[in-house]
Amino acid sequence: MKPRHPEKINKPINPIKKKPYWIRSKLSNSKEFFITKTVVNKNNLVTVCQEANCPNITECWSKRHATFMIMGDTCTRACAFCDVKTGKPTSLDLLEPFKISNAVKKLNLKHVVITSVDRDDLDDGGSSHFYEVIIQIRKKNPNTSIEVLTPDFLRKDDAYKKVLEANPDVFNHNIETVPKLYLKVRPGARYFSSLELLKNAKKINNKVFTKSGLMVGLGETKDEIIQVMDDLISANVDFLTIGQYLQPSVKHHPLDRYYDPSEFKELETIAKVKGFLLVSSSPLTRSSYHADEDFKKLQNKRLQN
Image (cartoon, rainbow, N blue to C red; front, side, top):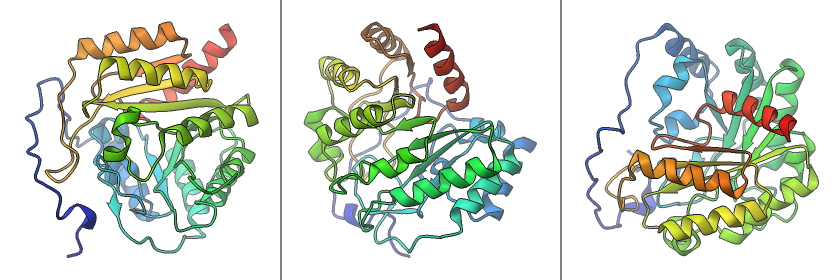
């Protein structure tokens, strides 16, 4: 069988630390969970919930929430923290925008999150495909709000603008970690390019909510996290998520430590003082965790301001 992460075969073994009691995910036999699973499987769709081994899949799918991952299940990058399969991707499924639109309809989603693998092999990084997915969802689901979690479109010039042409309600791109760890954790990405992408998204469409996320436990310091907060505020980012890094395997980047829930609460307080419209900070927080509820909160915050 072809290895899931061929680039990590010769990496040193990093033993996985035992999870503390506050990080536990539960299995579910709920009817809603299996309805979501059936819709995803019947339409041959890919979800980041499955591919990235998300700890919240049971809770989210039981609420019929799923984050669709477009452009295949194979990423052209080799981030040290990520469990998504790496290698040479297959060609794009031109029917995917219609399949996802139908799935959104069947699940009766009020808010949908669309993410993707990195597709450095494509001239536009897949921005046109994002555009088509958004347009088709809107046609069939006019009352559904749409959140995109995009790659960085590094070295693709203005390709990202195509995504914004489709007018998503939320434009999310995760900064992931602090600058000093980029070469180890995100070797194919560049910290300031990611910041610039978020900043430009808001410049192009000041009505879109911008969002970014951080993992902690990779070896960063509190001061470095605060500096990232300041950088994101300077880029006019509205919404920040902060969650615990969970090491997928012994070949992935080593977990430095587990943050206590009280530390997440402290980071949330600091971020709110910095000026973010909304902050979600907890051990199991992920980019699309409670995304529908958070979108409503963002709308209310904007009205209040």
